[in-house]
Image (cartoon, rainbow over all chains, first blue to last red):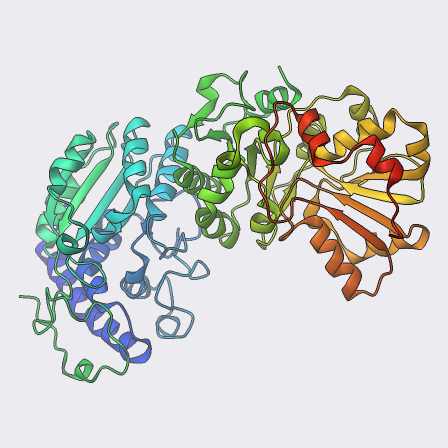
Length: 267
Length: 295
């Protein structure tokens, strides 16, 4: 794992601001699930810029590191990163082809997601395929904490442990909200850490908006025989202080008048 | 060891072939455990995992009880396999009448309606296990296929199928009245006709196992020399082969007298054996002798 230099850190932070502004631009054109986009954006920036080996050259290859955004409603964040890496064109990012959930025809999108509870099982399949064929690559699946309502996710936890898929990293974007309310109110997860631990999975916690912390935790990951579950503590709408960590503005319509007033502040 | 198991054992020597199951081994009793990826009773994950493997280039044979494979995991099939064009082979056990004594909770009688309406899927209901293997040997993974696994091993029928096998071909009879069927219904009707010379002269039986390939041309050719058509199936009416045929006849103004024998909108009455069940369904020697299309 590469060390993260101060220069790199500064570059990632700069991207955090720039890509947020681009997602706001996207939202002005098409609307978006902004709250979810901004809670996981920093994680996706980190993954593509420092951890996963996915780039313009190898993106069309099958046997490479794989990222699945199972919480597909954060697609604009993925698209923003893909266009930043020049894997897709900026015009495409802002076009009608990139709608609210990842579309498979877009380069860099391995799987069409959005129907919650699908992505992890797909990631389990890929990790198993890589393991059997001794392909030394990571499979990273990002799910939302609200997505943990889906029973299929817990089935995947069981199977990934049973199959000893050490090449699988499951990131839970724990912004503590789901569509209309807090996860606590809608369907309480109780002590999530304890629940995950009871599956005998390798549990790691980190701050999903702090690149230094992300790098520290990701640097220690090894492809042993235990799947990793990363609980990334994040905030809904992180970076827009007026709406950050609030129930409102999960979805922001293009007609939203406040869009013009949104300013990025990553404090 | 069954012919399908022999086939699977042989092809699974390749590291690119994956045999998956949701703890159902009806078609896999003689396959070594180390060749099977058993996900447990998790049909949604079964399909999701197969989608992931297929996406990276693996060839998947996915097994579960038909009802749970198709109905419970349907959204995963629709999005993970069909929409993403990840082609794999779904093998459902105990579909249709093969469920015999299980009762409605285990009856899978609507797969053509569900899977047959997907864009990247074929639906194949073989009359015998041997037919299934012949089909699989020619399968090229251009599309996915759902197969109603049929363990029946009718040696006489297998000999008929053996001759230059093509799905949807004629099995028996030279009569002017046509019977179209598939799966175990084909096999049961074959047995009746095989034992009755007079019925062989009254009917000809087509085994329309690749159901999704029914088309105007087939029906046009059929209608040139035959005017009467009986379609027998263990499927609800909605989305059934007979419904598809009705629509094709109507849309293309093809004139044939059609009698549909399907489950309508009902689960079927379980019986201990397939023979009893089929008899109870009403397709008997007597029924076929007395059938009058003009009524």
